[in-house]
Length: 433
Image 1 (cartoon, one colour):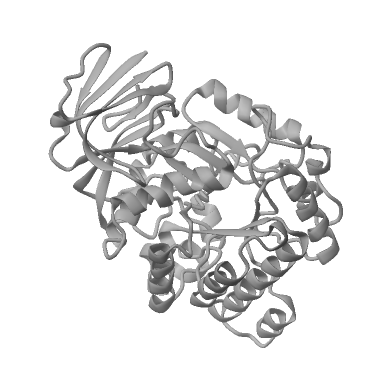
Image 2 (cartoon, helix red, strand yellow):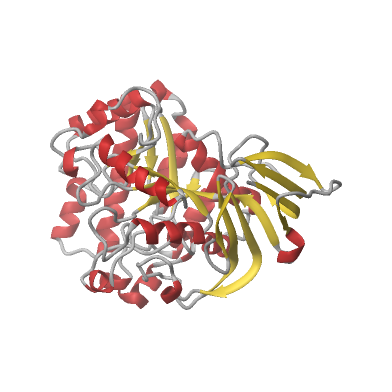
């Protein structure tokens, strides 16, 4: 299929210009400046979308929960994939805390094969660090061949919200990650004795969860340095964690092969503990890590602005209404991620920086050199977004089965109009095609 984009403002991490693209066989065949007239194939004219429409690389989510297999009441592969493309995502990394746990490469390949058959997104299942996420023995990562080859192999390893408590086993998992050249995503919920003491003393979740996150970030960094692997810190939410990461990056670059990257979520960018209280901080407002103070939110935004935080990742975690009433943590985030980020990051973060945070940097972290930028020869994973459109968040209209969002009822700026995956139009504002 040949698709021609003309008369568009085109933005990626390095460019902001007016022009067009020619897409053929799933790739960007040509990048054209405004002086050329493009015809042939399917022609998509930016003029038809209004003056605030932008053509960008499709987004890459480093952290999502598709709940497949095992939790259809929360989400299924089809609904999660539809939510992803509606949010402008063409590549998604999904976590391993499913039933059964994705702890072997065969399980990862099976899920990816199902996703590939749907043809909506490029899905990369994470492999857990330990068997069944029990923290007792290594998972199938020890059986993976060196190097990233084969369509079903994972691009990231993680124990999700169950940080490996045993230092020796955690180091052994990191050693396998180093051998494979894969990042270890650390969710930093393991708080050690100080956090346990705070819990025993009856401290509020806001207090002991802060101790947990800060302790676990330091621990992951120190063990990562010792093993010399790539540590990726998930959903950074405290001002202290941001500073630990900032100082580590400044002082420990490439020590013994060690590298450090991290992500922040849209809900930690645009919501605070007051939103959690409004929703019910032990029910609909509960998320891990919790929504923090305004000072923490500002620290996260500062980290995104100065490069301390490398990426924006959704931590899309859908639940049923019964789940949320019972206190299950997590929000639905794929369909609001771009708009939340655009709406709450206006100061100091332009569209080019936002594209880096949502496309180019995630591609770099995953080692996917074929996407995340607008460049001849790269995959035609693209999104058209109206950066001037305001819309009200109505969760009942989400494609995801999860309907819990801290932004429900709020008006956001930035609407996804079209998403392409490898040159195929997989979403339009009026529906999927």
